[in-house]
Image (cartoon, rainbow, N blue to C red):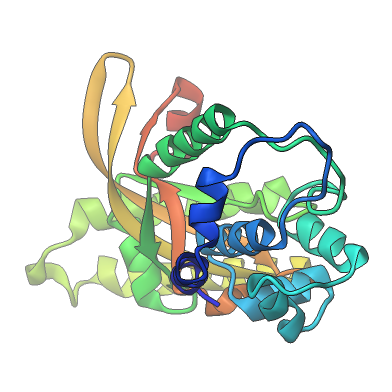
Length: 268
């Protein structure tokens, strides 16, 4: 179920109204099933996880995730698996605790809203074609994200970054409609293929998918503000997130502050 569908159900069944008007009690209790339904759907929306992807990560069936998002009863063991798959601790959905008071809930919501307000969804595609290399080579800065992988060969990642930077330099120096068939651009096609092969081999050796996209971002560096074209190359593990290849959008920072180290590492 989508977050919109879950919210519509909660509203139609007057569950949200009940949450808002119910007197606070200091008696420890497990989280409400409908609250878990909202939270799981919300996390899927933010992480760009289809139901099938979360089911695979949690090692449960697709119908189990759907039952959770309908507010139906499932075992504590299942809820723990889903919590861990979403990046939370065991017991997040099953441990008894004193519910938050209204002002604490409001504070948490405001903090989450602030975090989301500085993020945007960008369209992404599997990194498989020359057009994807060309798109990255036309940006001011590229971010190669391997944070989803448990183990990474930094030497290979450094080589990928270096090749993309080289493509950016050559394209910036030579790109013009007048020179598309000249020697530099014949060589560019080979360089594009070399980059695709590098990423493909890295994905094969590390059992990972590569997704890519570009977007415009307001970037702060010291007292300077710049509007830069940013390229993203993100890797996802095939074994624990096998449906990542089907994602069409990723959530990325809308505005961020650069340090000297980040600039040196990522500027094309």
